[in-house]
Amino acid sequence: MSTYNFHGNPTNGHHPDPDALLQLTGGLLQSLRAEYPGLVRYGEIIQGEAELSAEDGGPPNRGKIRTALEAVTIGAAAGTGSLAYTRELVQMLAL
Image (tube, rainbow, N blue to C red; front, top):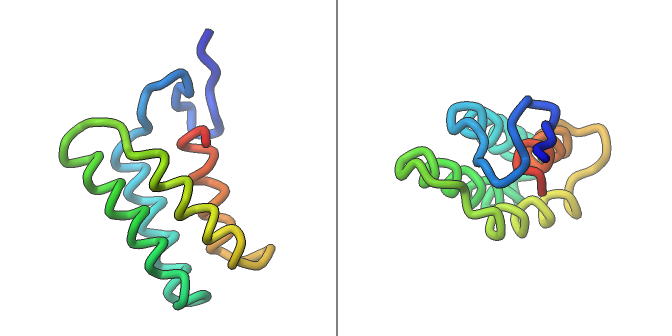
């Protein structure tokens, strides 16, 4: 049985909408640049994986993305845009 996350994407193995994923990763990267310049490299990893997924039409590399999101989660304070984008990505990717 499929379940649906906040974005209405199935979480039973299907990959998220590439445009929505790119939009969220772009927002995360912008927030990281403003709030946590030391964490930008993790945002770049996430965005790079989203771009690869959009280019080849396959699912994003959830392992690389999860690892980078965990690093951002550890470094970002509650109530920041960076953490909000991180949570949205975790939800979108059903991580």
